Amino acid sequence: MTFLYGYCTAGIVPLRTEAADASQQESQLVLGECFEVLSITERWVQIRALADGYEGWVGRNQVKFLQPQEFEEWLNHPQKERSPYKAFIAYNQTDSVYVPTGAQVIFDDITVTLPHGEFEVRSAPQLLRQLDIISTAKQLLGVPYLWGGRSDAGLDCSGFVQLVFQQFGFNIPRNAREQVQYGAFQAKDLLRANVGDLIYFGEVPEKITHVGFYLGEGTLLHASGHVKMNNLLYERRFENPFPFDKRLVERIQFVQPQQALKAVDVTHQITF
Image 1 (cartoon, helix red, strand yellow):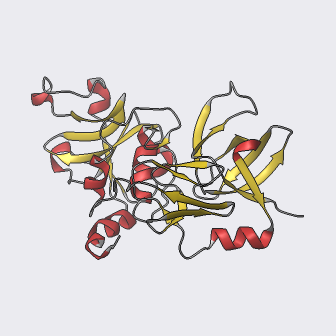
Image 2: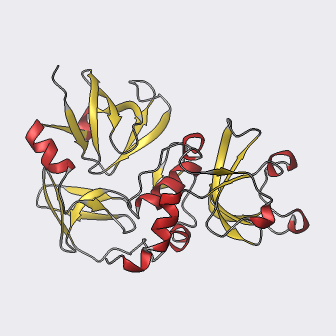
């Protein structure tokens, strides 16, 4: 059996449940990300994203297929990284490319390189990645909520968490219900939570519906309407509260993935 692979050539591409423009966006591919082809129609390609295993349909005119050797070279290119900058546009003589945060590209401060060409960076983009996970997450404050979104153009709650961790080289799962299995699952009293804990909401651990970063003193940083901060403590319920009902708040769950903690611990070694 011959396997076919490719990569995303548009800045942000909806990953849909069905091969139709009106189909719901479940997730996204971002520029440069690789995928395995599952099936092809005239206008659509069913793919499995290699970054997180998510499956769905993308527009055929927003991706390119690669020969096996080309694909291996791009997938494993030592200079390719996730863009640590807020979204910007790069240009060449005939085209331009939108480069969102987290795009997988080769970037040398002058050009953005992809398998189909080089693009000139005409103005310095703004750095999003900071020296630790929480500082980086705060750079996304104000980004609008978008179901299935995983870029700085729009994020859902788990896409927000995934994007931040990817900035430090950790490809955690796409959905909150899968992310919660990434590390040791711990139910705690809110007042015992640590800054940087991931807080999960759900009636039971098997039915997680929301996730955010804990900032201490009852403050949650999360994507709900937009990326923002809300308060979870009952005694501070009039100070920008999170509009989940009391029943859900009482069942908050916490997890500190060991890989993520390592990312925080070694950030002082990261260079840009």
